Image (cartoon, rainbow, N blue to C red):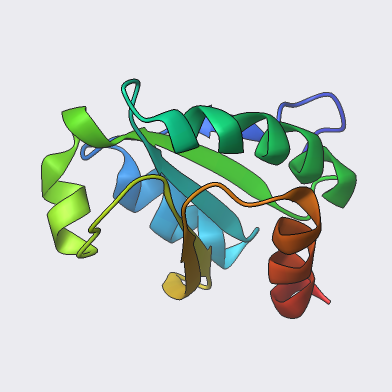
Length: 114
């Protein structure tokens, strides 16, 4: 990843296979399924925006609008929002739900990224 490139991007049903599944073979991808109406989603967003850059390109964050991508939500059996999935080598390796504090998110990521 280029040092000035953003670690954040949007994905949807049409780009998920390429931007998330395929790309996670190179770089782990955290996927935030979020919705505009969701209070906990708004609480988690700044946490992710602060934590992800700490990993200096070792991790990317994809944002998926849950309302516009219900097929993806159904495929991954999401029951509430936000739900955050971690993909490594094309597979979901872990997930968490609800707004979480920075120490939780760092511990979650460190468990998989070392």
